[in-house]
Image (cartoon, rainbow, N blue to C red):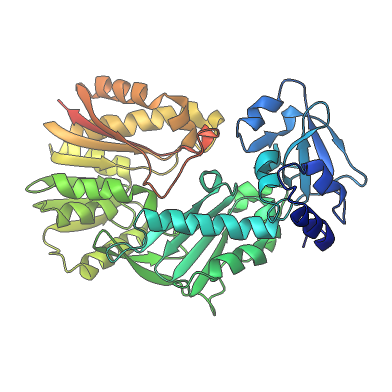
Length: 439
C-alpha cells in the first residue's frame, strides 16, 4: 500500500494549495521514495497529449536508487527531469510505463496522486457511472463491458459483467500486483456476486510474468456457466470459453442484423454461441444456419435455441471448418440473402499482417460468392493490427475481384458504446464491422 503521509495531505488541504503543489513535491514526501523515468528529448509532447503507453525507446534514463521494480509507481519526467505525470513501471515490457495521471490532474485531486488503490476505486466508479448513462445494465441487457483498458484509463484491465458475474481479464503486471484492490472495487458493485479472474497468459509473459502462477476461476466460488440477456435475446455463457466468455462488443451489430433479416435466408460463419444467427431468427429470418469449428461453441449455440424458444426447424448450428463449409456450399450452388463473416483474430501482431491478409481475402471471397447478387455481407475483423493498418477495405476489394463480384459499402461500425477508445492511443481500436452489398 502506498499512500501520501497524512500530515502532508492535511497541510496541503489546510493551506488550500493543491493546485500549486507539484508532483515532485508529492513524490519527495512519499515514504518509500519514487523513481523518475526521464524521457528522451523530443518525446515528451506525445505523452503530454495523452498517450498512456511510454515505450522503452522513448526513455533516456531512470533516476532512483534502488532502481524501480516491475509494478512500482514512478514519475515520468521530461528531459529537464521535470515530472509530467506518474504511472506503473515495468522493467521487462516494451511499455516501460503505463501512465495513470498527468501532473495537472494529479495535483488537482490529491487523494489519487501516487495512490493506485484510490485511483482504481475512483476510475472503476467513473466507469460504472458511464455505463449507467448508457443505459447499462437494463431490463433487456445485463451483459456489457464495465472497464475497457485504455478507454477507461486503466491500461491492461478489462472487466466484463454477465449478470451477477464479473469477468476480469488481466494483461498487465500492475493489474496482477493490485489484484486484491481490483477485486475489492468490482466486488463492491451491488449486482456482482461472483468474480472470475482471467489472466491473459501470452500477454503477461511479455510483461515478464509467469502466468502459470496466476489462478483463474475458483470452481468452488464462481460458477462455470451463467445466463444473460442482450437486447431481449438469452444466452448461455461458459466462463471457461473464448476470451471472457462472450463478445459484448458486437451487441449493437447483432441487433442491427435483427432489423434486416425479416423473410431472409441467413448464414452466420464463425458463429461462436450463435449471436448473429439468433438475432436473425428473432428478426424474422425464414432460415438461419450458423457454422463454427468449436464443438463447445456449437453446443452453446444449440442450447441458446432452446433458451429462446425458437423453432429448431428455422435455425441450425453446424460444427465444421469455415472454409470447408463454404467450398462445399459453393459446389452445391447454395447462396444466402445475408451472410455474416466474423472470424477470430487472424493478425494478433503487425508481423502477422501479411499472412492474415491472405486469409481474410480468401474467406471474404468465398463469403461473397455465397451471397446472392444484390444480397448483403456483414464482414468483420477483430484484429487490431488489421483495423489500424487501413488495409481491410483494400483486402475486401481484392476479395471481390477474386470472386468476380462488385461490392458497395453500406455501413461501417466498430465496437458497442460500452467499449470506449482513447483517441490518443489508436491501438485500442480493434473491431471493424462492414456491411457490403454484393453484386
